[in-house]
Length: 228
DNA sequence: TGCCAGGCCGGGT
DNA sequence: ACCCGGCATGGC
Image (cartoon, rainbow, N blue to C red; front, side, top):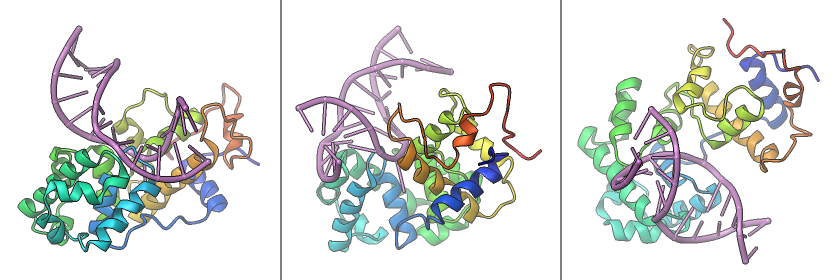
């Protein structure tokens, strides 16, 4: 297997191995927003249970969720963990949605950079949650950085463990600036796929990882991270 | 049984 | 500008 040459190649290698991931799992843009908040530091399998509860209670729409108080929401999302905090965060997001836009459709019309700023000002919405909403709920071209992305990139020595969110995100925005959101969408999903499969443990050696040749680059060898 | 999972906030240095 | 404790369930 030849070494990975650049980030484009990096994606193709993963894609060939894992196939298209069809992210984000969710029926509506609003469901994606809710899932983005519920999955904070939480296994997705637990989020699914919470989403199922919300659906069963017919509470998975902006208007319906707006009717419920924090206590009622907390009871429904209990399986996703941190349910009191997350109930408050969901309320904060809904309030923001209605106050600023009145609905998801209007929010989608906002320009990427200003919308990101505003999302980050909502209590409980940090960079990953904001970017997940922008990309997966609204189809904006932005790269999501999460624990898997960081873990895989550190493992492949493309970033230092101390790299910040914005630094990592920039690695992807430079070479893929003009690419459609679908590229950002599946690329991030591929990181989750490879991370879950081969970087579970801190001591795992990624023996069968489709990107393994990258790990065995000689210390002088450097992979080009962008295409300039 | 303990450790971990698709973060973020608030208070303290 | 960092560092840290807190938040909580379910799966292995």
